[in-house]
Amino acid sequence: MEERLLGLDLPPVDRVLFDKAPLVLTLAQVRYPAVIRFGEQSRLAALQDDLAGDYPDARPEQQMSVTVNLSGVQQSQAGSTLWRFSSLDGTWSVVVGQDAVTIESRAYEQIDHFSERVRRVLDAVEKHLSPTHQRRLGLRYVNEFRHEDGETMATWRGLLNSELLGLSGRLGESVDHSFHEIRASTEDGVLLIHHGLLRGSASGTPEVAASEPYYLLDLDYFDETPTAWNTEEVVLRICDWNEIMYRLFRWSMTPSLFEHLGPRYA
Image (cartoon, rainbow, N blue to C red):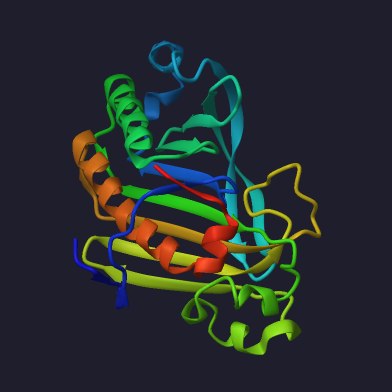
């Protein structure tokens, strides 16, 4: 893969794990044409059986719409019924609906492990729901950088890349809230970036106080080109996207923040 991506110098970097990992939520989603027979109990029961090894807890829920805007992250009920299959500790989930399947993780460490879970879930969906094709593919990483002195941009401009912060970084301690959206078209999709100084949690983490500041880096790579259903192609694409997104994630940090997070080489 090239070192210059999205107009930035993004050379390959070593993979590391962090003791204070900022990654709070990882999502991979495939949307497909509505499966009218989705609600048939026999189909759902067979799908549940195939997923039960990794996701033994099953429950219905209402679809939620998540919007990221100037006020932060907002959720609203969207209507249709979904089925959520989760691990016992709740850190991994598969959410299946009439027209989409989403793999969610709050315990993500490596793309190899994540992509293998995606493969198994998509194989089960293909077997039991038989979607005709793929309408949209997306991969999303929600990072919440936190620092004990992170109340204003004065601290963050020493922790994050000045090119990312832009004018907000130049204004420094006068800025206690910021929000930016960047949409970049690429050869194989669209990269949507939301970032800024917010409070609380974009991912709904319950133990975080609503007044606690953090810097959001939300990376969402997607492609809305209809294609034939192909699990192996999906796995290859999310691995390719992951490489770009991981390089961008590392580019966003200064050496000071990198060390503050406690890196451990994978």
